[in-house]
Amino acid sequence: MRVVINTTTLNKGGALQVAYSVVNELSLLNLEYSFLILCSVPFYNQIESAKLPNNFSIEIVKKTPAKLITRNRVIKILNKAVEEFKADIVLTIFGPSYWKPKVSHVCGFADGWCYYPETIAYKKLKPFDQLKRKLLSKYKLFYLKRDSDHIFIETEDAKKRLIKILNLKQEEVTVISNTYSSIYDQVRLFGKRHQLLLDERKHVDEIRFLLLSANYPHKNIQIINEVIELLKTEIEHFKFFLTIPEDDYNKIIKNLNKKYVVNLGTVKVEQCIQLYQNTDFLFLPTLLETFTATYPEAMVMKKPILTSDLSFARDICRDAACYFDPLDSKDIVKKIKKVINNPEIKKRMIDNGIVRVKDFPTSKNRAINLLELCLNINDKK
Image 1 (cartoon, rainbow, N blue to C red):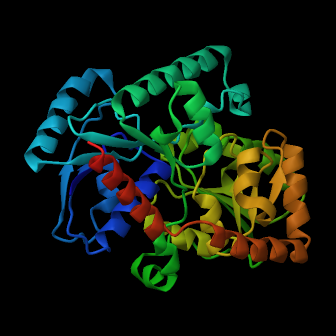
Image 2: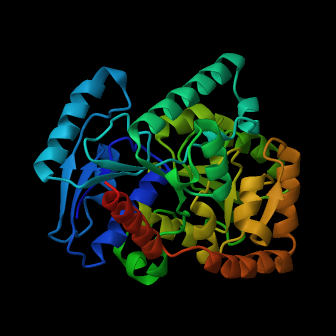
């Protein structure tokens, strides 16, 4: 089988991590299949250092089909690549692809805005922005349905919602859960290979919170301004570590609060290991997720999780996290103090995380499941 892995719509965030993990795991399986990776520039920046076997080839697509102004030109490039590669199937991680390949097409989807219309994330948007977001969701869903022969999604709840919204059949959507990358099972190897990103602690009692996320409105990063204002009256030495572009950092974080924040900029997947190693808590005040891999990553790295008291977080973390109201800075600080001042609670969260993470599939199994899905869809042609 000849498989095209399409990442041309990937720009930032967790989708890049998923694509990296899938490609990495497939490359380790010693398969007789041939793979062509159609890379967005951000994804190529992640994968360029990987040592892929000879049955993998890469083509960089510098423009995205997501933009109308470049779509027709990009689609011609994609169609030509698929034809010349003599592909049997296209696997898009993630869609919508804004392109209907001339062969079978399996497309992933993980945009919670589109199937959680009741999300509190809308409360953070201005009325005009709410309208834009709702129209964008309809736009994405239209292309997702039009361009996909089969859709994979990360949770059963998301599957039920998507089937209802798009009037799909059960057999047209498959759940393939998110998980942590296998690089987290190789901590020593990667710890030696990658330069330390964080400075040594200036104070032995400095508490470090890692907010490992791209900058999207639903990530609610700006709440840390309010949290810092309250927390600095309670704790003397602490820092928040962000991984967002410098321009975003300067827009979001108030100058007065920058002494409590370190922005590392965009980091590669394998560098995240050292971020976990050198911080104390995963702090994620997100308002909307389908399944973020940062939760199982923190569990496997034995880091306590401080996150939003919302259903998606509880479904994934269960008793491995301390939950707060993500829109209430006072509640956030209250829960931070609760965990910091109670070592037994912190240890219990870590222990529960070690148990909980075993419930998730390995990244190898996820890659195999995706490949088997492609085989099944291809066989039905």
